[in-house]
Amino acid sequence: MLTLFVTIGTMDEDKIQQRAREDDEGSTQQRAAILGLPYLDTRTVQDAIELVEGVIDVQDMHKNRIIPLVAGNDSAPWEFGITSQTPQSLTRELQQKYAAQAQNVIFYLISQGGFTYLMNRYDPPLRTSYEDITIGGEGDSDTIDEVSKTLNSVGSDEVFDFLIDQADKLGASDIHIENQRIGIRIRMRIDGTLHPVATLDSDRYRVILGALASRANISTASNEPQSGHMQKEVTIGDTRHILNMRIEVVPTMYGQDAVIRLFNYDESMLDLNRLGIGSEERKEIDSIISHPRGMVLMVGPTGSGKSTTLYSMISALNSTDRKIITLEDPIEYGISGISQIPVDTTNGQNFADHLRSVLRLDPDVVMVGEIRDADTARTAIQASITGHLVLSTFHANNTSAAFSRMVDLIGVNPIFSTAIRLVIAQRLVRRLDDATKEAYEPDEVTKQWVRDTLKDLPAHVQKPDLDNFQLWRPVVSESSPFGYTGRIVVMEQMVVNEAVQKFIRGDAGEAHAELIEKAAREDGMVTLLEHGVLAALRGETTLEEINRVI
Image 1 (tube, one colour):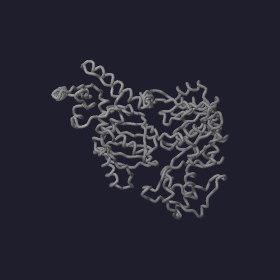
Image 2 (cartoon, helix red, strand yellow):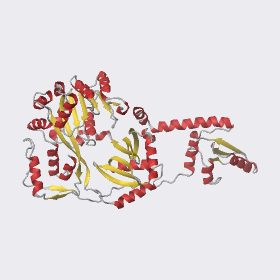
Image 3 (tube, one colour):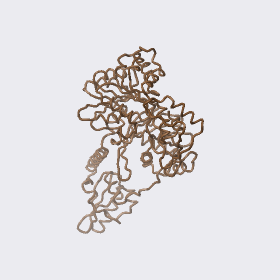
């Protein structure tokens, strides 16, 4: 069950390993009593033992699971650590050898974990250094071949961790592992765009899927889509951070394809000041979320940054005089000071039932991961008019479409018109690399398209000179293989006024998205496309990127 795994997955890894070692030592002690051998718990001496060299060949020590612990002489016995896998013929041979020299031998039964630890001290494993993964440009098959060669050479027990570490280092938001007729294709989504990284041998598939299954609590034999969750501590240089991962696996023609969504957990990044929101938009957000009740909806497609913006709002509201509760599927970021509840919708749980329960806990602010059904929508609306600030996400293309979709979901609802206070539609577009971007003079067709797009800008927005303007294009460099670096937020905000409320109540006819948008624009709303084109005119991104995303 995913809910159970989330609890286990967040346990301290050291405690899990410690418990496994204790079980190992307990069973070894029992076996020693049965065999009539002295038992040695190496944990008490493993760092103090001066290991004896030159007595047994290292390869034989690995093969026969035996290690010299103390060198003997005529007055003191030789001491060896052995395991249940050590051949009795070898122990008899050593006894005879030292008896011929009038010396005694003591064999201590030690655990497999104890033997491994001591052998790693005696014969440290070689650490192989692999080249970092690089992303090639379009049509760059040489880079893909080179990365494929690297990934195919990484040891079986390291390849999964190596892939995760490299994706995090590259700033990827997703890893796609896709089975094809010949080989496994690895792609990574960086700054919102998928890039082919490597093609792996088919035997790597079993290794990666096996590691994924054991850590994310999914089955390698299932014929149904599965969801899971896992965490990993990633070290880059001297810094460490926790990486949360959401796993989605689906059976395909050639095997199970997997998508790993990476959430780089850094609580300090969940800050509205870091999102680059315009001053007017930020003022509206601050005004709405500081109000003690009402509903705020974030809309947009998957991967548009809705969750990060919501978390940043929660972080801004997080204070000792507010009780904040979140319902999430799954929990993507852990934030200190708030109560976060996982909701496993894949196993029959739903947001509505949990929401009714948490409202009895006297919260000031509630975040619902997503409104997916009428029951959750009505419960959230009811909560928002009874003294709670409710934040949630909803799937719609833009702010006006969110209202028409919500009306389709719950019908004309006068309570909804008084509950909803702000709807934000959001996209993420790639930011031009300021160090390499190049200005150019657009052709007349492009200029006219920009003029047509911005001709109805509200009066409060400073309109650029649309007769004389330039645009920018990306320039590829070694440090910026696509000419972009990072992403910026493009945001459309609709503050719900009386004119919009009339459509929701049904007083102004049917709630068509076009009519709602017209009413909001008359009140000064700037659309997603207008915000995007203005960002392109400022040299932050390109028109091509705006048209690709919006």
